[in-house]
Image 1 (cartoon, rainbow, N blue to C red):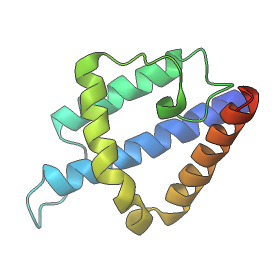
Image 2: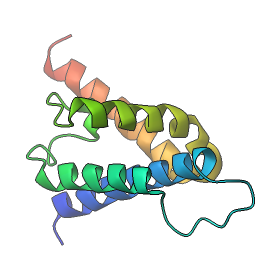
Image 3: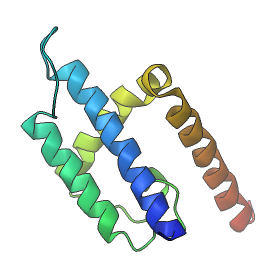
Image 4: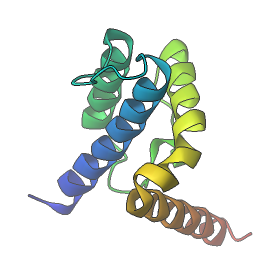
Length: 119
């Protein structure tokens, strides 16, 4: 497996975990066993995965939020934003290693962009 494919899989894993956390906290009753995502969240996870599989910028970008081209349909983009706003801060509690990795990677991307633009 090449480097880009590993990166793609890791991004897909992080997004799915964030969607899973959102779904568990917003769409399931207390005490209910959550085996799978609800249909609405499953659709969003499938959509996010399909966009990631088709991404031509995977080699250069770190995350979709740092990408210069936003390929999500407006409705799906708003749904993923809601998930990210909700799950992002909570990832520190449920997936601390992923959350810290995401934060560091995002900061590096911002620095790299500023350096490349001469700012």
